[in-house]
Image (cartoon, rainbow over all chains, first blue to last red; front, side, top):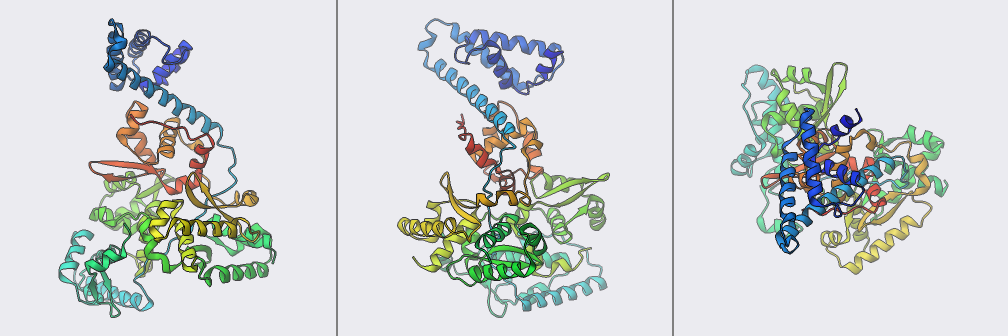
Length: 228
Length: 168
Length: 168
C-alpha cells in the first residue's frame, strides 16, 4: 500500500528522479547514470502495470536517460564534450528542481511567521475628463437615447471599441462631444462610444477643449510629453 | 493630540486601503472628537503641502490616501493599464454589466443579455478579468481587483453616471 | 531640492508598489545625486518621526513605503491577508518560481518543473493569483499585485535567501 501511495506522488519525471536520488542516499552527481536510468525504467514499468498515469513527459525523460546511459558506457565518454554538456544540463535541472521543492517546504512551514511591516500604497488618481457639467450633458444625452430606444425597436449592432476609436479619429475631429454621443442609437453604442473617446484621451491621441470639442493631439506635442 | 496616535491613525488608513471613521474609533480606542482632530491635522499636512504627492480624502465615508491630481499624467505611465481594446464585444458587454451591477449570478447575466453566457464567462475567468465564488448552488460573478485597477473601469462608468442607470 | 520634486518622488514611490532608483531618475528627470538627497530627506521625515506610522524602505533595490513595526499587532487585525495554505504544492511551486523570477513564459515554467503546467496556470489565473499578458505568440506570466500584497510572498522568499533558479 505504501508503495502505491508513493507512486501516485510522482506528478512528473523530475519528482521520480528526486525520489530515486533520495532512495540512493547520494547526490545526483554521485549516482552512476546507468543505475539511475535502469531504476527509472523499472519504476516506469511498475507504474504502467499498476495503471498509473504515465504521461508522455515520463517517456521522454526515460529515453533521454537511456541515451545518456548508453553514451556514458562508451569508452572515453568523459572526453565527449557534447555528452558532458547534456549531462551537466540534466544535473542542473534536477538540482534546480530540488531547490524549488525545498523552498516550497520551507515556505509551507513558515506560513505562520509574522512579517511585521506591511506594504502600503495609495489609490492613483488618473487624468479626468469629467466635470459636473460634462456629467449633466452625458446624462441628458443618455436620456434622449433611452427615449429613442423606447420609440424605435433598434436592433443592437455589434460594436467594438477599436472600430469606434478609428471612426472617431477619421470622422469626428472638431465636433462637439455632445453631438457625437447623441448620434448613438442605443445605450450600448453610447457606452462604447464614450469608452472609445476616453481611451483615445488616455492614449494621448485626442483631447477635449473648453467647449468639449474633440481635438487631435499634435505629434510633436506628444513626444515632448512622454517618457522613454 | 499625541504623536503616537497620529502615527497609528496614519498607519491604519494606509494599511486598510480605505477605512470608515467608526472602525478607526474602535481600533485606535479614541473619541470621535479626537479622531476628527487628527484627520484635520493629517489633511492639512498632506493636502495643503506642496511637498507631498499624496492626499487624504474621504470618499463615500471611506478615508483613504490618493495620489494628487497634479501627478496623474506621470503616474499613468508607470501603472500598467490593461486596455479595454483586447476584449471582444460580447466580453465587453458582460464587463460593463459587472462594472455597473458589481455582482451578478450567471442566470441574471443570461437574463439581461437574453442568451447563454457560459463560454464568455469561462473566457473572462481564465484571463483574470472576472472571478466567482460559490453561493448556494450557483456562483456569484464579479470583476477582479486587478482588472478594475488596471482598466479603471469603475471610474470610467462612474464618470458618466453609469452606476445610476440600469443597462437592462 | 524643490518641493514639487519631493512631492513627485513621493507620489511615484507610493503609486508604484516598489520602484527602482533608476526608474525614478528617468521618470522624474533628475540626477542621481538629487534623488539620493530626496530619498534621504523622505527617510528622515518618515522613518525618524514618531508622528508617522509608515516608513520608506529599500528592499532589494526596490523603494517602497511600509507600515512601522510598532503597529504590526493592531494592523494585523485589518490587513487583508491571504494564506498560502490554500494553495496546493504544485500551485505553490509555480507561485514561488514567479516570486523569485518575476516574469516567466509557460515554456520556461514547464522546463523548470519538467512537466506541463497548463492546468495549474489556469487555476491560478482564475483565482487571481497570477496574471498574464500577450507577448509575441505566447504569454508572460507574473503574480498579481493584490496576491503579492496579501501574502507578502516576496518578503517571505527573501527571508529564505531568495533561492536562485537558472532557466535552461
